Image (cartoon, rainbow over all chains, first blue to last red; front, top):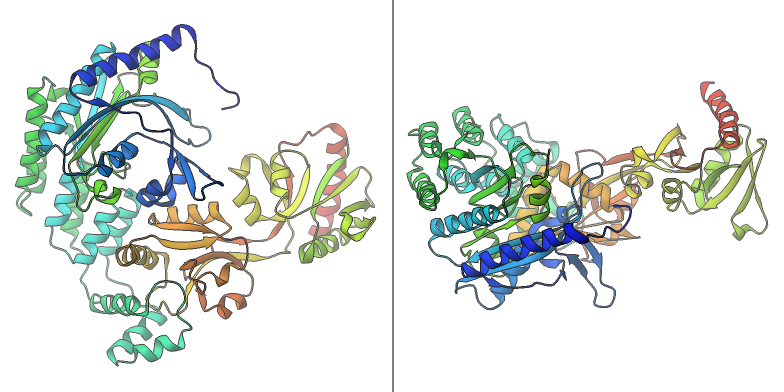
Length: 380
Length: 234
């Protein structure tokens, strides 16, 4: 951005009109309006996403109070934190509207500031029903804005996570694969590593294994210099022992890797998805519960009047959005796929546990981007 | 308009830079008081020298306030976003050599590589309820290196000096820093990971793509390059 942009006249009225249409739809459906601050302490986001957030959001130091502030990159995190502060156990349904701020890479035509109107549906114990009502409400909002014909893609990382849980594999490998599901490149690198015979240990590691088996670990570590930093001697010993105990672990079977890859490659209509998943997985593992759960969600969408033949299912969809861990969706304008999405959202149960809850709680949310709707309406 | 060349104003890099230019028939003499940071070029007309801190030279080049500048690749890549669009290297000078490395406590016998570090980040969060801390002044280079290795769960801690002492002072677990011989790392009970350096840096002569390049500056640059190229062909 080279100069401050000012929205006025008809363009301003168009966006304001869409925001109030959406607000009315959301509040009529029982979502209470909330207005989180534009600025909030960066700590929560840094803890959630790690350093990568610095390339996606605007963070800056707060000299008067110490620490760093963040211009909100979305509403989900501040709304969920505010809800949790009053207790995670009760349900909460919220709607919001206003600008969010995102850094963009140079040369990519995406706005650094844009408005969202959205909802967060927290604590709804019937997850399929909550997913369906959020999805249907967003569709209703887009209809009310006369959004042009749209293409919807859904995914469900619960299926992929379920597959990783059920496949027989050593616990350390399962843990690392689960951790990196949102980083496809690292995930595939791990699969590749696990699929090969383990390389001969480095000289340092060979000496470590010998010392462990000769009960000379203490002597070896004492020669390696002072204990500095918070990581303790005992945690090093424990990890060393774990490495030694898994040094003869067999490579992951090629059939397992092929199955994980095949599931991640699935791309079909939502109506066909449960059957295609069941056929791909076959009898290797029992994923009936996960697929049934997914089918219940589709049935709820069907009941809400959504045509499942018009919705794309992509098993790998949602992998670049770290906090989504279940149902996830994105809606783009047909013929204007280069525009940002018109709307999107998904389920993020597991991050509630990292936002202060003691365990994970049901959480799903979604938002509409009125500016993209406006651009799509006049796109040709 | 004169061709403006920014040179490091202090220390070993300044001395080595002056020698490098002298070997190419361009004398650089300090004028005024020693602490005045003024110098002039001898042996090439139309060349103006400004003495700057090595860390400021990237900004001046990127903003186009100087035509040429001498500084390390580490500084250029750390301080200029998408540096290739703003500056180009005219010569690797073979001085100011240093590696940017990830160094961990030597007693971490279970850690050889970034892949090990990834597993340790996970273990560290479980045990301490916080992210493993990495001290550095090279935030951008370090962040992109970690991203390249798929590591997300760590925190950068800013350190503008004596970074090697961070682990002993419990302000960080590991560091990302410049080293030339590794002696300081060893003295602080640290060891470089086996994946190799993030960057092997050397001082370069850089050209700003964004400075106002009028005919006089272009002409002086041509004469200047002829000197440099002649020397470096020998």
